[in-house]
Image (cartoon, rainbow, N blue to C red; front, side, top):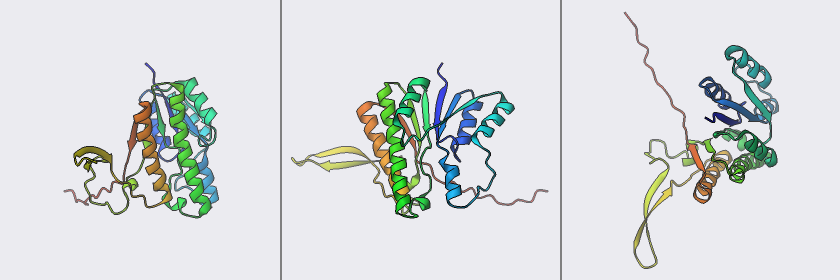
Length: 231
């Protein structure tokens, strides 16, 4: 049974724990990352709230704790399409998890440079992965981390039906045709705009090439707990 999974962006805040969890349950994990999350901290003159060891130290510590190996490949997937394609052909993963995007809405709005960087990185990274999967001809399931920001900031408290709406459209001859359309996107930043374009990429490649894609539009869950005095 093929148990190989590539984690694009596996050095990041979500990518690293995802890599550890999938490794823990028995998958062979290959992390592909350009380590830009670390470079962003340097650019912004800030440190992470928790110390972050090098990717090599992380992988070695995991091996010592569990005996399991995680492979790391340094690749900028938004720029090096040929390397992405070569890795997919070599590894033949059953699935790829895509975290490899500039991840912050405020950062994406910081300056014209940051806006252009976010668009160039996020859209090219997503499209390179999709295009490479098609070119390999392999049956690879793509899992992507989206955002509820796709729906905009004015949708709080609204019941959004799994991202799709059923509508009726009047044709030229007056007939009503029922269609299922994607929920209208209302991005509030350049970052969120790239996520809406991701969704269109996924819709096209699923429809045109039959790619299996799961796009998770996750949100922040706030858990309120009452303090209870136990007797």
